[in-house]
Length: 128
Image (cartoon, rainbow, N blue to C red):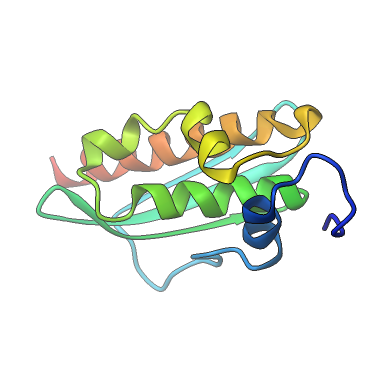
């Protein structure tokens, strides 16, 4: 991961990349999605929904520190939200919350938002 002198990473982004929240596959879940982005990074999200609300969420990625930071922030932003709200988390929301990652890595936020949205949709299909 980027060192303290790496340009473009905010302190928040660096923290999420070095200490990602909600990392790793769970024992059980209600919705799941796995997407490989055009850069070759793969991200996977799992969510548990109760009463229409995202109660638990996990992710993995085989990507770089920016992928870790974006996946981690996406899980942080969606926990406790209604599934419909979680599906609407946009790449700009993730980037704003992180406070800055290198411009060439901003596509990682698109991958995180898209994979989260797909997991939410999968959870909705599972409960219908």
